[in-house]
Image 1 (tube, rainbow, N blue to C red):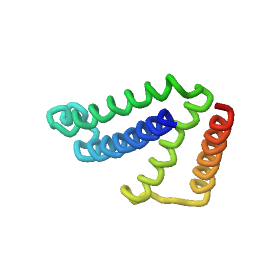
Image 2 (image 1 turned 60 degrees about the vertical axis):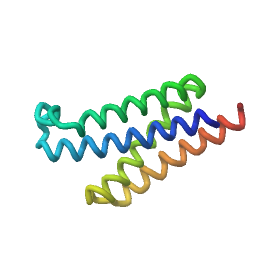
Image 3 (image 1 turned 90 degrees about the vertical axis):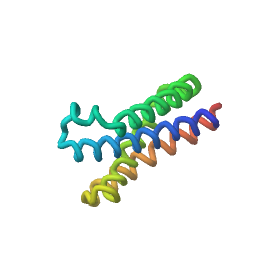
Image 4 (image 1 turned 60 degrees about the horizontal axis):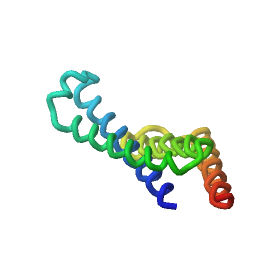
Length: 116
């Protein structure tokens, strides 16, 4: 179970990093060279490295066929962030897509815990 917690932490950190990278890209108008002169980008890269370490450990304990679909939760959480933070649109198609992703990941989680 610890490995799934670490995987979820990795996913949350990855989504946070993606949100911050979006903020930084807006702030610096997509100019990565400008952003390199400010601490924000390095904090984000450090957090990305932490997410990688958590994912790496989780990957050593979780079957690949379960691990990779779990990463699709970044799509769902990123979509929620897009709506809540960036005021992006949310429609029936996105709702159905996110629901299918969550359902699939949930089924894989239940199946992997039953078989382990």
